[in-house]
Length: 260
Image 1 (spheres, rainbow, N blue to C red):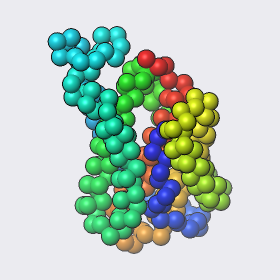
Image 2 (cartoon, one colour):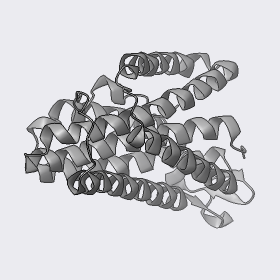
Image 3 (cartoon, one colour):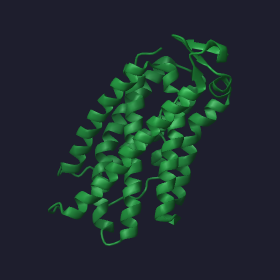
Image 4 (cartoon, rainbow, N blue to C red):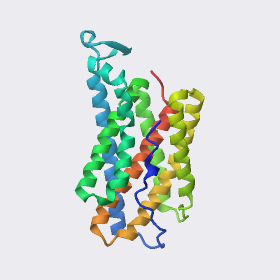
């Protein structure tokens, strides 16, 4: 299951902004948020693919274990993917989010940005395991489906005049429930529970995509006069949307991805 952890430390809760004309400052701010998020996803994808490529081979003389279709693990690959170290890699982003949640407001703008890029890289290492389970074509298809869903939901959150702040508590409880159930299923290994959690994950983070977009937009009005908070807010908003995207992607991949 994806990093169902971000709601343990929300990066600020904005009050509902008064309706008004969207000014150039808001558009620039939101563009910065989306640019950070997109760059983070690209970095994650590059790290995931490079790590998988480094730990696998098609040369039988370098292989120690067969995976599929001529792809084999190297000695280093077996030491990473075939040992408890894999769990450290998979769960590392969880610890990273806890760290950011508690320290972000005491960090400088530069440190906040570095932490975001480091988190995206760590998430890439964690996500490299999807190449062990799903076909490359399936991963690509689900990625573009997720991108289309995310764009539509975020656009809704940005443009709707409906106050979505009431969704927050319900969605937060949904994430907490997913975290707990996912941890339990590590030991139960129940396919039916895994399927149900994947479906709920997609629904919860679809709602959070719209909710977070509106909160980011509204938060702009609370910090518009503080350049330091604007810079931090753009990174923190990007992190929230990044996690929404990644969790939706992994949920859809679990539901519809073609396994190797």
